[in-house]
Length: 133
Image (tube, rainbow, N blue to C red; front, top):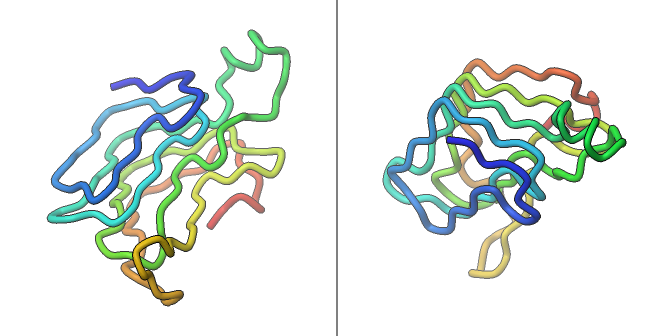
């Protein structure tokens, strides 16, 4: 699957579950994936690239700072957060975040830690250290 050049979110999941996104490229979007409160097995990204600013966009637009911010945005105070397995984040610089947690307060959320982000085999290429979670 390819999600490319979306002005808003490439993927948006709201109370979603049992979804697997495999062998995909998510590039040059407003937000790569926005995630709020999963159900069941939640959402899994596997063997996927999340690219803040692709080489194509750099050449085409004549800039190096990505529009994408963040690559993955998830609510830290809810349950069933996404699972990231063998995901590569690339091209997140100029203060942009590869992974950006946020507080979800619309449904009486408490400012406490919910379920953590589950990760295995993440890699970061051309990513500012300040953008790492």
